[in-house]
Image 1: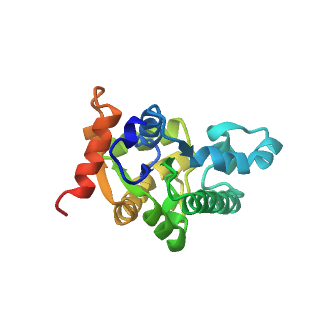
Image 2 (image 1 turned 90 degrees about the horizontal axis):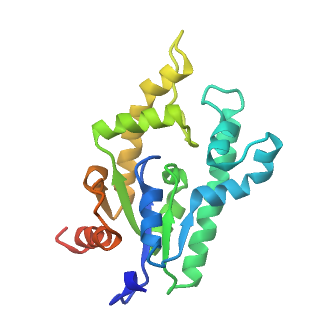
Length: 222
């Protein structure tokens, strides 16, 4: 496989970052070389399938609709259910990697992977090279607009704090930057390296170039 040429170790990359930062895009682009790829979103959706179907929901947008806006009466319970399945999913994936030391894998994580608990996150760091796709301040506004217009599942973990008379969308627009800032610190602490999303926007950037950027960041002077 081209991506593993001259490598002593298997290719194991986990991409982390906010929803909309490009994790799925780059996972698919790298997977085109033949490396196995796993989407945590897809696995979590499968685990929630019966609960989604009961409400007439399906797909990743269906998961977001099932969870509802963070002011919904059922949100806190469903946020907890989602996180429990995310933890279960990550544990399954890491157990597979621990049992198969030569297995390569590209992992498309969720934005909420950082809430999985220190034990799982340390296992993730041991098994994979973690790459944080970081959005600039300008791009963060785009992430907010994407969430408002095309909601994906988001675990707010108490960051949604409405003010009196404020509509839910207004609260989201006001509180989302704080959620991004708090998560960014956690992503950077977890990651082995950080790539700026703006530097990845060049349409001519291919998978080998992306891998080289990671290699340069993780093997060069620290």
